[in-house]
Image (cartoon, rainbow, N blue to C red):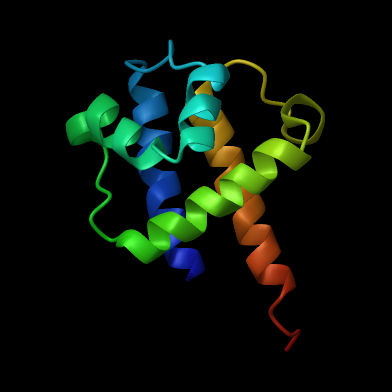
Length: 109
């Protein structure tokens, strides 16, 4: 997946966070949806017009869900990302981590 796909989603999540309308979305709520594989349905229904997921076809969604499931089980959110409360902040941290992972796999120029 291209890094631009990840930044596209990160900008929407950042805007949703800035609106203040989603402060009550908890890490636990987001983690449950990641575990169940329903995070994209959750984001669509919960954020409605504040997010555009149209660039994510089924294969891209599957890739991100699997990546986030791996991060959820392997990474201490508070220790590595400094995120302890807001679920959208957790998703932003996962997107940033995904960007780092993809950049690290690109050869230096």
